[in-house]
Image (tube, rainbow, N blue to C red):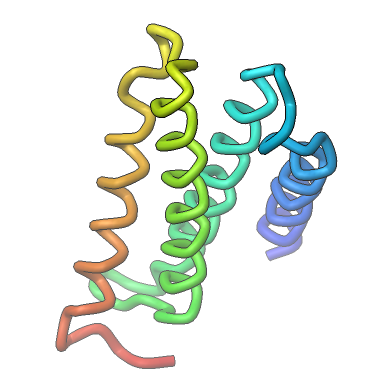
Length: 115
């Protein structure tokens, strides 16, 4: 459990670092890329910790993961709008939207236990 907490703390520190760089105002597109990736990494970590059994999920963690994916998607959409997407980033928005959709599926499952 300590490793999970440490990883979560590290990801949140990365988010804070990129947010402090004012990605919405920065001319450096890599700041926005870093922020979008940091948001999705927090979501990935939470989603990994949310699975409590074969078909059991901690709904709070899934909900929180979904919100981080949503933040990531917003940044990737901004990068698309600004024509900043690099070749190696071209599929990132799709991955984040798929992860967000996965969270929605989990949350909409009637069998998902509420916690």
